[in-house]
Length: 250
Image 1 (cartoon, rainbow, N blue to C red):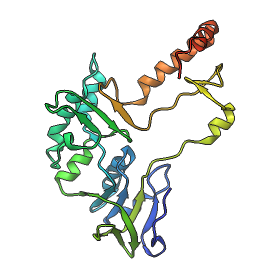
Image 2: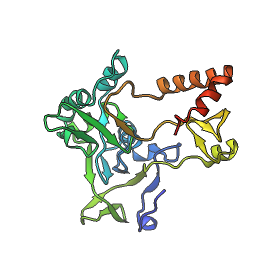
Image 3: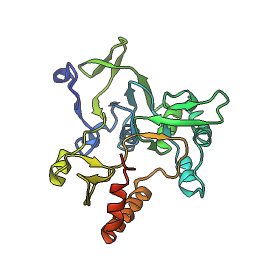
Image 4: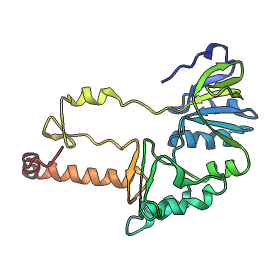
């Protein structure tokens, strides 16, 4: 959570775009500014427009890749995981609507011929077509930079630009819930095992992307795999002991 200088004089609503902390009915006919371009930031663009926003500012320090819906479908229905290069190429028609070049994003690490690449960014993909269509129709404007302070109905950037905004929606990531560590009595983690105890297992979805091939874009496939893996160790604890003693887990 971040506070900006001048929030007390901003006059508009200020809140976080997650956990139902912001009332989107307030943006009807107005101009919200969204801070952060992770998956939740992209989804907040859609939510604001669905709630009647006239225009949306999307403010970020650097651009993360969003993913068109058809590319997500391609990944999830493919028998063999598409490569990073295939994924970025498949994104290009929708990025042409912005217009922008997905190959130029910081998270795309590629060879000169763009035949091989790894996508490595600190945010998950915001998935959907509304973000791209909003750019095409001029309903969202992306601003790369840092906020210096707030003024009455304005966001003042470090660059000196002043953006008129009626509301400020912060989508700046999240911190893990420490209650999980307290409940499980975590002192050390050995793979997914808590304190080398085969009866205690923690799995958390990664908050970012680091891959050269993509077998899925949702939590469910990984979650069912982890549940089935842990169920095996519960039913066959001797196998868990063999794994724990192997020294193969980080």
